[in-house]
Amino acid sequence: MLTQKATTGLLALAALALFPANAAHASGTTAVKEWTLLVYLNGNNSLDSFGPMDINEMEQVGSLPNVNVVVQWASEERGDVERLLVQKDNDTDNVTSPILEHLGSVDMGDYNSLVDFVKWGVQKYPAQHYFVDVWNHGGGWHRQADGVEIRDISWDDTSGNHITTEQLGVAMAQSALAIGHKVDFYASDACLMGMAEVASEMADSVAVYGGSQEVEPGPGWDYAGLLKGWKAGATAADIGRLLTQTYVTSYQGGSQGDSEVTFAAYDLSKIAAVYSAIRNLGTQFSHLSTTDRRKVVTAANGTQTFTYSDYGDLLDFLGLVQKAGITSITADVYKAVTDAVGQFVIANQTTSSYAKAKGLSIWLPHTMSDYNSYGSRYAGLNLNKQTAWGSTLQSLLK
Image (cartoon, rainbow, N blue to C red):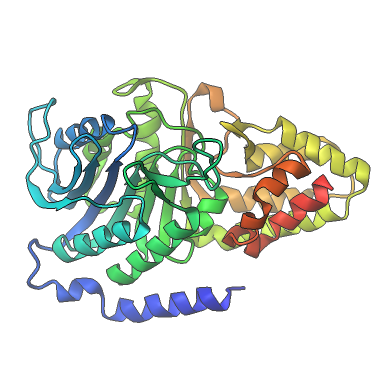
C-alpha cells in the first residue's frame, strides 16, 4: 500500500504529465529529441583526473541525432564548473566540446545543484526521455569516507559536502516534477550504489535505476561504447541493459582494461513485490527459534559482500538461508523473494569473481554492534518503512 506521501507525489506527477514541461519549450535552444543524457560530473575530489578522460570517451561519438549529451563538469584542479554540449572530435587528449556556461564555484555536494542542472537541461535540451547520471565517489547508503563522516555520493572536497541517499531521492523527485514525468533512467557512475536502500528512495520518481554493487574502477563507465550502442527508439530498460553490458564488457580486456566489476539495472515499477516478499521473509525470521536465528546470521556471514562486510547480495543470502535447512520457512517464502527480485532486476552482469552476485545488495550487519552503528538512520529509509527490515535485523541479532 502506498504511503500518503507517495500517493501525493504520484498525483502531482500525474497532474504535471497533463501539462509536460516540454510543452513550454517552443522557444528552447534545441528541437525536442528522444533523449537527453545529463551527466553530473563532480571532479571536486580525488577522481578529478578521470573527468576529462570520460568526456573524451563521450567525444569519440558525441551527441547523437536522437540524443543530447550534456555535462556539468566540476574540476578541482581548474577550480570552476562548466556546462558542455558534447560533440564528436578526433582529439583523444583534450576536451573540445563547446562550453555553454561558466558557473564558477558550485557546491557539487549540494543536491540542489543537481536539481538545478536537471532543470536547466530540461529547459535548454528538451527531450521525450531523460537519463540522469551522477558521476563521482559513491558509498551505498552508509560508507564512512574517513572512518568518521558518512558520505553517500557526490563528495565535494572543496565544500566538504556530499549528497545523502535521502537527498538523492529528493533530488530525483524534484527532477521528475521539472520534467513532467518520472526520470526515465537514473544511474550512478559511482561505487556501491546497486543497493535496495538507495533505489527505494527514488521509487516514486524514477522508472529505471542502474548501479554497481561493488566499487567501480577509476575510469568508470565505457561512455564511447554506451553511445555507440544507443539505438533510435531505445527505452529506459534498453539503455539500462546496454549500460550494464558495455560497462562490464569494457573491463574484460576491453577499453577499460581488466578489473573485477558488477553492474545491474532495476525496473522500479516492480519494487512493490520486492517490498512484500522481503516483509514476509522478515516475518518468518522473527518467529524463528534461537538456533534457527543463528543459522540465518551464519548465512549472512557467508554471503557475497561488496567492500563492506554488511553490504550483501540479497539472493545469495537467501540461497544460503535456504540451504541451512530451516524447516519452519516454507519453499513459497523463498520463491516469492526470488521471483520478485527476478522481475525487478532487469539486467545484471559481472566478471568472474562475482559470479554469486545477482544484482541487488541489501544491508546485512553481522552483530548488534554493527546494527547500532547505523540503525537509527536506517529506520528512516524508505526501504525500512516499506519492509521493516531493520526490525527483522534486530530480531536476528538480539
